[in-house]
Image (cartoon, rainbow, N blue to C red; front, side, top):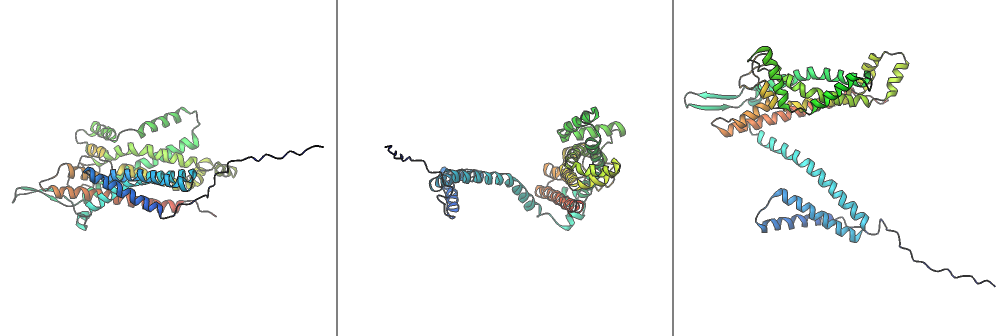
Length: 366
């Protein structure tokens, strides 16, 4: 008679539970507050308090502490998740903090001089014969007009060239076309050109044509074109490549010529992204100082003729007022911060206009 064998009991390791424990919600803020307090106390004891060092070491202590507590209560997986989430949050804060700090500094120092007269009057330095002193007169009208004229001319030249070059690269040129390779290589090289080299190029070009009186707003616009064109080409090229090939093929199937397809279908579909790229290019060059300082020089006089004489711009005005102050240093520095704030306001306005235009031209979903 056969005996039945008794099954041997085996022990197996239970699977790790994802919901075995949960830290209370109040633990994280408490750990963060304790970390901040401990690091602050240590810095004060050691004889110096620095905000940046305080925040960095507090974040490290917080991540270490919350990781240990979470590992004890919740397990290794949730502990790893909390630590990684904390690292991502810290990286975001590190990326945003310089921007917020810069904006806060510019706004707080620039608002002191901001007024209607500052925007609508021509400022500069004048000689007072009664006191025999150089007096700084607040006003940025000449710089605002010069910035808009120089940047506007650069955009009028760069945007058509950049868009047409991108259309050729995407829609017409074959992958092995030598001209396509040459354009792509030159665009890559121009993207990395220092801005001061662009200014020297523009000034040298006009010095050969018009002689020693080469300082002009148009010369500065040419310098900005050297910086803008590769950005417009690259951004437009990427947007055109995102247009589905089915749209082109459907247009060709209806007998529509290639040129009409590009204008009516491809460019219209990519219009939103192209406009965004153009705005990025304008924002890239509107704050340039070195090429404009070299090509257009600077002046306190109002000059709206881009082909005759030096012109003033907001970045150059901020640089000259801060680097070469008059006898009233505080007034000159306030003038510089006011010019910087106006420059930020112009960039914000351009971005808002671009978003509105891009939304208008964006393809409508049906």
